[in-house]
Length: 551
Image 1 (cartoon, helix red, strand yellow):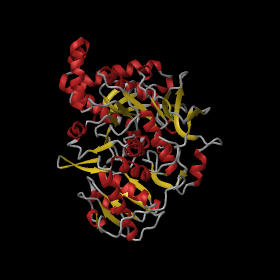
Image 2 (cartoon, rainbow, N blue to C red; image 1 turned 45 degrees about the horizontal axis):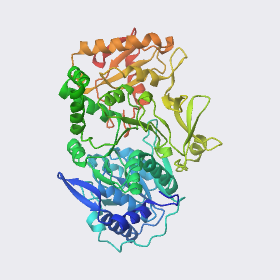
Image 3 (cartoon, one colour; image 1 turned 120 degrees about the horizontal axis):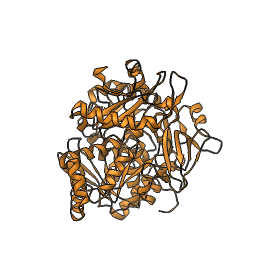
Image 4 (cartoon, rainbow, N blue to C red; image 1 turned 60 degrees about the vertical axis):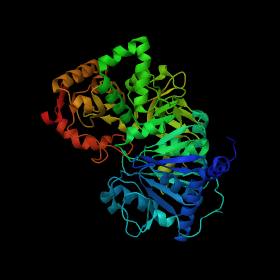
């Protein structure tokens, strides 16, 4: 790709001229694809942008998007870019309070609402005076429906050219430690990152992408939507959670990104079908091994994949090693909203570096502060936090490096391992600091653990809270207890005395976005668990393993 600035709208024109009638977006409706060519996407973009002008919205106005992934999300995003509006994506799982906060803080003038599972619970967060426009799905009431917008006013054909320094979007962080902050991303930062993804992953018009992780999150917006603008790849969507496996198999993606939680669910389904011991045996038999691997790849719908990725939260190294054994290499990557999510990746996949998040990509430089914090600089960095000058100033150093808040180790080959968060470190009642993440990673090697969080601020010793994997939850308690106890007893002797884990507590209620333990990107909110469990677990001693209902 040439070095001249090209906005996504310019790229859309490029693909229309070259492959106008080729399918670009594939939206499943009732199990059947409804396809959109490059030309149709451009026409719809111009119509929607024209309708916004007709409704009195001015370039520079903020417009929110609240919807699960769908073809209309892409079309809306392009229309907002084309019309000079600033998009404000909101997680489709966000509660009414978060929606209200983001809309008010961003000063959004209008909102597009689309595919939502719980719109009735969310509607209170959308102010009455806000202009609502609905995508063609079951969603909350709106003044204007999609089909009406497509016929309203004149299509916007000649819009002012997009400039590199123009603000494209405000992306609100998922808020694992407090109120979300709006990262300001320009067209220049977005373009650089998308081009870097296409350059490194070598995607082109022959590739098939699948969009299902929230588009409100920077990773999906860059790695799938953004890269499709610059590679010309076709993008399919997922209809619903129930149809997910069928949707993946139908899309036959050549690139597939997921999150640790889904990779672990896929693993569970495979083991449940074949059996752990039987699978291990079959993988040792030369000819049979290849057949079994092929069957697993086909069952997941990933037999055509050239690239598999994982990000947004730490993935247990044992899980990547397990997939490597069945012939699927998952490239772990690291990024943040603030740096357009693409900075460090283990690609090409290097098995000897499993457990690291890889090396910095070309154009991105990193360094380590004396405190051990990872600092990053790249053209993909945000220009600041919206309406928060103090927070913006404090997160950059003199040389323009961004303080990530992640602690790291960098090895001799330049591979980075994330060892925790600066803010996660806590002080026990003995006045000693504990870094929980390295201990969590060790305990997470136990196959019964799905999610883990170590708390201990103000307690004599750390305590591990564990959510069991689905399979483990069905096993006899004593079986699970003895496994967790053996894991704990193997780890504690190698920890500093003030770090030793006093107990493992298996929690009763699954952690999710609804009960406020997980962010929309499935990161654990440690401060929420601290407040809910600190008093309850105080007094557990001696490497005990117990269930919450036994305390």
